[in-house]
Structure formats: C-alpha cells, structure tokens
Image 1: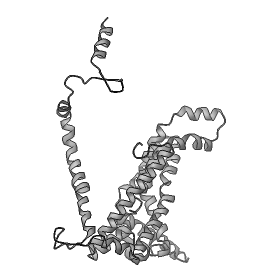
Image 2 (image 1 turned 180 degrees about the horizontal axis):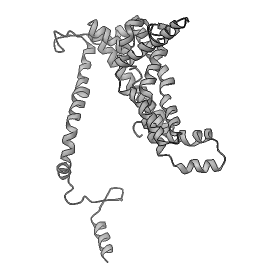
Image 3 (image 1 turned 135 degrees about the vertical axis):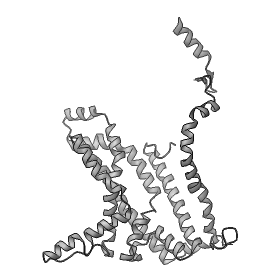
Image 4 (image 1 turned 90 degrees about the horizontal axis):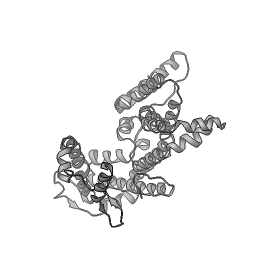
Length: 331
C-alpha cells in the first residue's frame, strides 16, 4: 500500500514535457538559489581559478586589436595608429623570415605528430603488459619524473650528455675515436628536439592511456585467447578499438595546438644552431615583437595562428563525427 501510494504521488508530481514525456519534479528546497547556497563553498574554491582564466584567457583576447595597429607601447592601444590589414599583408606578401618560421613550424609539427604522439600509446601498451604491479608502479614513477623538470634543466642534461664536452664525446675521445656533433649541429637539430620532447613528456602522457586500458573488459581478452587469438590480434581487435576514442580526442587537440611547437625549448637552443633551422612562429613573435619592436606584425602572426588552430579543431572534429566518434564535442 505504501509503495503504491508513493508511486502515485511521484507520478502526480511530474510535469509533462511538450513531447509528452514526463520529467522528474524538482524536490522541495532544490531551487537554483537553494543549490547555490548548498554548493557555495565549492564555488568559492573555484572562484580564483575562474578569475585567472577570465583575466588571462578571455580579457586578454582584447589585445588582438594590436594586430590592426602600428602599435607603440609608449602610446598605448588608444593612441596608436590604425593600419587595418597592413600587418597581415606584410606577412602574406613574402616576408622571408615569416615563411621560414612557418615552414619550420610545419615540419616540426609533422615530426612530433609522427614520432611524439604515438610514443605514449606504445609505452602504455608496454606498461600494461607487465604482470607485476610493483614493477609497473616503479617504472611509471621513473618515467613520470622528467615531466616535472623545466626545459632549462632538460636542455642542460642533453648538453652534458651529447655536447662537445659531454659524457659521450669524452668517452669517445678517451678511447681515441672520432667525436660526434649533435648539440649545435643544424643537421641534427630536429632529431634532437624530437628526442627531448619524447624523453620529457612521453611518460606523463601515458596516464590517460593507462586509465583507458584499465577500463577494457578483461573477459574480452580471455574469450579471444580461448578462440586462439595471438597477442598481436588482441591488441589490434580489442585494445586499440578500446583506446580509439581517447586517441581521436587527443589527436584533435594536438591539431589545434599544432602551430605551437615549444617556445621555451627552442629559444634556449636557438643561439647554438641559428635561426635558420630553429625559428618557428612563437620565436618569430618574440624576436620581432619583444626584441625587434614590431608589435603589430607579431600580434598578427599570433592571431592568424589562433584562427588556423581553431579551424583545424573544427575540421578534425567533423571528421571524427563522420567516423562515429564524439571528438571534442558532440554533433
């Protein structure tokens, strides 16, 4: 009797939506104001982070107006001369430095997409195959550590190992062998920075993939093993399909950030190899804006880079929807 009466009361308290479906009625005391009062400690804790994002991410977008000015810091935005799209015309009319920076950026992006992006996937698969959890945790801790080192330390470590007076060359020299030129060698620069990124960030990037691997139903592996599937077939037909959603999502985000290839890493090594091979869009903005004083042109480069990144994310997300994945947002 009590259960039936409760169900009837619940049914009567529901409202019909326009499509005829019933929606649960709001419980007494669950108004917007009541929920705000209930959750205000959490909202207060989130307020500083929200303020930082609003000030340094959204309000800072107003600075893009510099791209349409002959901006002079001592005049400010309000008194600097408006030049319209002149800064953009300088970029796309064959500025050799800009074209060189663009070419280097695209080449480094291609290298990092081909070699850096798959590295944490491979590492996650290798770690997931370890039987002992204690060994797995120890290996993970060692691999995570480089992520917390600054690029200054990472570059210094590589210098001490691969430099002209580094550990490897000292060993070769002590045994009468020819030394190798890596640090400061323009021909080896792209291989060097790619290996630096892999060493620094691959271990940390495996966290997401390991989390996804832990959610795959183990019974699928057991059933496939009973059917005679090899380890490689299990990876191809069970593991990789289970990781496909997160791989697509991270690849889309990677494309959106594809024109930013590591300002700090490159600027620290630019003097050793020269700007011909190390100049990218981010260092171009720094060298021409902060150092050279061409604020308007540098702001135009940054604005174009942001727009291109947004377009790449939207296009890649549409492709993901066509392949049946959610991507960054649902269709």
